[in-house]
Length: 295
Length: 110
Image (cartoon, rainbow over all chains, first blue to last red; front, side):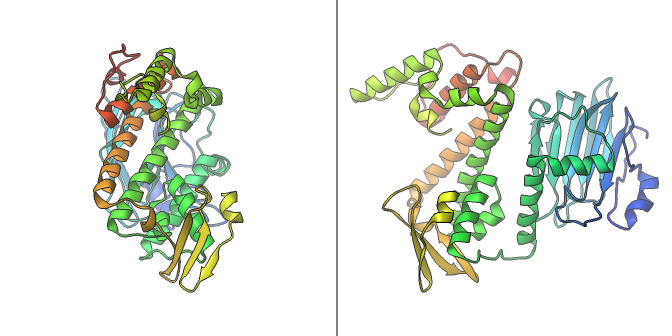
């Protein structure tokens, strides 16, 4: 594959096999190559992204430089412009029911680089695996930091990896439900009050907007508020996951524990408290109880 | 979630009510709509001006958390440093107050 080539990577379903000879789709990736690997399951599309899907990526030597893991098998393009040892590229992922999702790439190695999807930048420091849901009226992207060094890049291994990874399974399971609701028009309301409550909590913490809005009776302003709450909740959740992954569970407990705040933070918190008792406006500190309550 | 599954929910025609699992004494209301049931969130929402303010704050705080997430796991960055720097950033955004303490790291240089 010439680096500068624009590659139509896949087509869906029956065209898949025919297209592979042209575009370079393969069962497995060779070192140093850009690859796209589509797969389907004998069990069908129970969960697109897990039981079927397409992975686009590049190997650098034997390391995986990046992976874009999608739940569709729609055509996509990648134009590479390597500059020295830096890989640069632009491309598009076709959506099922929306404008193509544009992406850019600049990477030196699996830990140093970035990608953008529709202009939103993702630094490889937070992971080089990107889950992209193409179902629904709007693409969604989730960045994950996974150890990909032992991941075998062939169809069976990718499907097995997705099935066994809780984060990948949960993400695509959630996107499937959300996308189906959104594509089918007005989302249906839950069948019982309890179902509505459960769906509300699940969707709020899981970042599933379509399911969230289907579970509530709200006007436009209230929906905007819910979106902000959901965004904040999922942002904090992602922060927590990354924090725990990097520093461990105990560090996260310490992070939340006022008694274990950084020394300067403790002093500031104490000053904050004393000033509060005197009716003064608190001075900013490294950290105080008020900030902590948000996380 | 277990609390929700165990809640007693009383249906009264097109409405249903249960006790709030988080706030004792407070009721959660549901209404029949869209061929099913929906949680009535309007009762707990603040008035428009306050809602606008809270939406702005939440977006701002989410932005700060996203910004400092990129410090996680970086060489030389310890969890206490992130704790401290994110804390002061939240205080700055919420209250407009800036600490005179030395920074643990410069987020813009990571």
